[in-house]
Image (cartoon, rainbow, N blue to C red; front, top):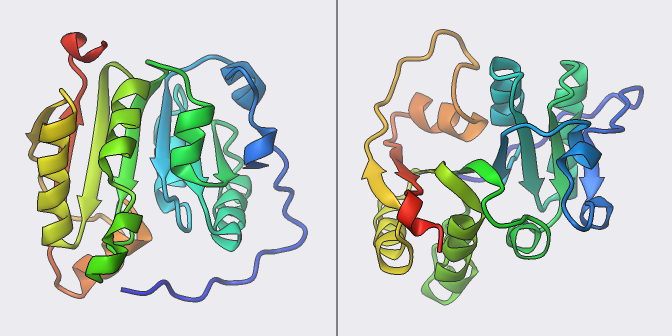
Length: 218
């Protein structure tokens, strides 16, 4: 399902503190340099319009949220969404998610990783471009703290099943645990905009959650 056109961002919105480039990220990693404090950190890979980031940050002010979005116009849109709501415990990085994991995020630094509706790259010759590869799953496992969670949702059953097989093959994460579908209480009460569109069109969403056990720490 292709992305819809974005609304124009109000030029008066100050994105400072809510939008960063890859080269802006601290080396070595310092939560205080990102959020002004050290708190449990959750990362969303592929933040799109930022519905999850904004909702999660508002619901859990004691946690920090980092969105990784490769498309610059979507990264800016998501950052503007955070700014409009005055959320200081979330920001968006315009950059490649796997690279951020490889080059910036330390071992055992994350409370959760969220991957919602990544591009399925349908054609067989393009599947190597998929986000959920063996290499990236290994990076996720490395970066998760003990007890940390991986949340993976997609509307493509084949991608869901092949990813679950990969998780079992290349990691020691516990799961998959079932994630029950809940009824939304209002029009934006969905995990992401993509989930909203998928469910309103009557299509299934496949959900799984994994946990890092103590013996997965390496």
